[in-house]
Length: 339
Image (cartoon, rainbow, N blue to C red; front, side):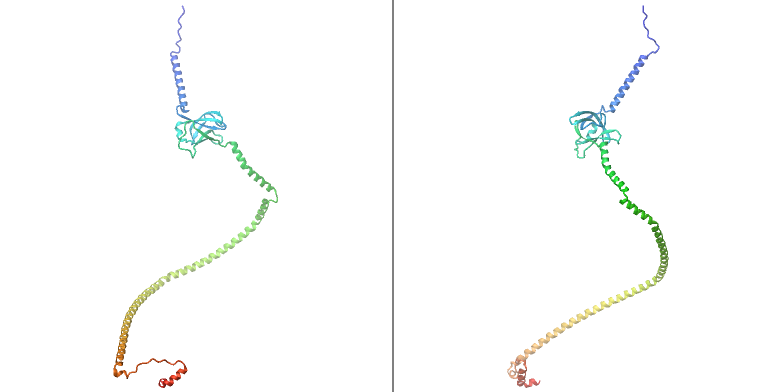
């Protein structure tokens, strides 16, 4: 009869411990997987958008997609299409409202050797409506190193040509550069003599300044003396001026009073003259009335009978003009000619 197998009791409870170990390891793997998935955005809503590129150089799956420098998604897939390469971008749904329709994308690199990424550039004239799933953006390819080198070459080539031309002129003894160098050498040779002349002129100027300074000190002393005398005489002059001004004020007051009195006298004289003229006019008017009354009285007396024959009526006579008329008048009126 076979004996029943009895397992060794060397590691009691080892099965339970191994089970716990594998269970803990499995839980750790699941936790790490979930954490990595969360970091990769598996549990975040994504919006797929697309763009077409002529080629896929520099673009790869998983490449970061950035907006204003922040990562908002990644490159999800690439496939060949009739327009080149169709690239699918997976954008986090929370950032789609900041990307308006009509935006563009471009491939940029951080520095010259940094990591490449897809940069979303919102268009200035884009509408306010955000992008939606399936929208196609315009791809603007950035200038690569080859284009930059070509531009640098095109810019440096004229400079190198000018440099070669300058070097060729340096080797020509009749060039303007050699003439300029010869003129500069001549000017440098004349510098010592010019320096001596400048020192001589400076010495003369120094002597002149010293003389002028002495004269200026003398003039300032004279001005100081004149100022002191003026300061002493100013109070006396001020007093005399004040007295003169007071006299002028009194004289002006007297003149004003005299003018006022003269005006009053003139006014009174004018009034008296006006009264005398009025009286003279009245007397003349009365004389005219008296003469008129006398003429009327004489006329009335002439018409009375006893006096009408004695009073000769006045006759109008003409005076002689020429010599003949004067002689005839003398014969006719000897008494008048004698008078």
